[in-house]
Length: 328
Image (cartoon, rainbow, N blue to C red):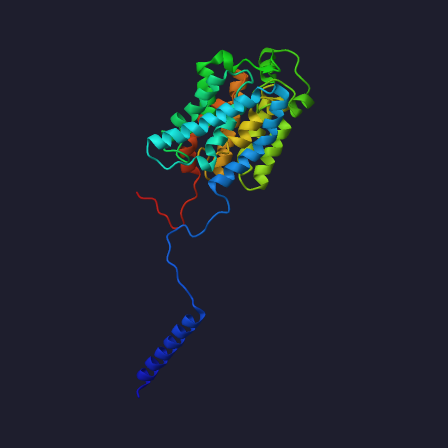
């Protein structure tokens, strides 16, 4: 037998032994499509975490503003879920209300509304958020701006008087942002921090919103880069423009928007560099609107404007692929 034949025979023997071993150990090979790496969070679990983080501020608003607030939450959240269900049924799409994203949208919208808002307005705002801003563009993950903030701005334009009538237990009072804009005696920083001031339902208690935001960061639901950059820029620019930066940070909707709305996966940049850019842009726009604009608050408009810029931010902030060569 030649040397080549001996080697071939040895290879056959090794192959046979390998096949016998695989058969004995019952090794199974499974073919599957990507992705092969799965995250521990699902859409439903993420939305439940967000709802949990918002709950303390929501409960506080019920005790502080009055029991009627429960109706505002119920109408906004119920209308959001119903609008999504009806739309998906009518368009013969898969019904996705179990992922709780519509509940989050409704809750966030409610927290951006005054306690005295008529319930029918709250319902229309919720329907606008779900159908016009979210579903028409393809549903969750396809909307180009935050649905709750877009609905708030729509309602502010449509019903300016009702949206700026802030009451506490039925008594109309000025918000800290309005006092900063028009002049007057500001509440103490402690009251502003705790939330015993006038404002929208979910924006008054900075401490509870901060706790909720930290919870989401610790749980890995959101990245700290964007909200911290946003808040820091507003703080620095407020002092630069001659205002009390702490009041500017603790008052209005900054804490609510920075942690719970600016960080929306769909409408925020994908990279950390991009999130820093967006945070700087949001902070700059908020400070400019509050200082030089006719409206005392600027967080909603700043987020929506930066949402539009997110595709461009992603384009300039995405890392280059290794070995990629630009075409001439």
